[in-house]
Image (cartoon, rainbow, N blue to C red; front, side, top):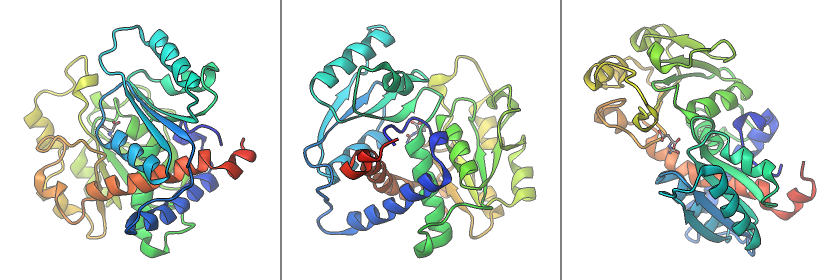
Length: 319
Ligand code: NCD
């Protein structure tokens, strides 16, 4: 595997292997000296054209823990047209000998453009492209679910039969799209829950069950996992719901809804959270919430992805 562009490109076996490698990386992250020499001498560039806190820091930490040389390129505010700026930047990075580029861009398909352009010979990792995909988020979410469900017996396991409800702004969410693809591959049962305005208009090619009422879904389905999504106002060019108060009332996760969950169920959110809108403080800070675990697991999972794409012997068998 040379690039990671889409959660859908991974077979079940490849996904499980990355999650298993991440288990080993988590052990490293628990040590006093949290460092492996695996990527010594390799250069990784973090190319972020869009805001990010968690994902950028998480990749940077993962790269440093694997001893890579790290360059952070934050291109926010560039007024050059997107295609050209991407090409110019990519060619500059190539000239500097980047072994991998982690790219986040507001244009859907930007990572694929970079991977297919021939501008860069190194590996491309998609860290979020527009409303399209965010494969490492899906992997860290799958890792978090597997860990909460199977605990220390997680190695080698899929998510067969796990019922996952993804709730909220599905229309604009690359997290939802990548999660759907990976969860389907890992055998989970995926449910989308949203007001009709926040679901894609054509959902016939999605392998997810649709629900239009959060309370009904919780009651009827008793999900094992509830994943709340951020309301992405920056991607909204119109009004998708009447008021924030109304959204919170019908679609926000709160203490009362938390009480309806099975005791063993988990509540996820990729961050950043709009507290009081899609999730309230009681739920976000509850024992069932995995918000901070997701952040911690993100580092281990990104180390596993970098290792899979960049470590020498694997590249020799690259596909
Ligand atoms: C997500 C993203 O950027 O797509 N956040 C993240 O990577 N932690 C989700 C979001 O912004 O809502």
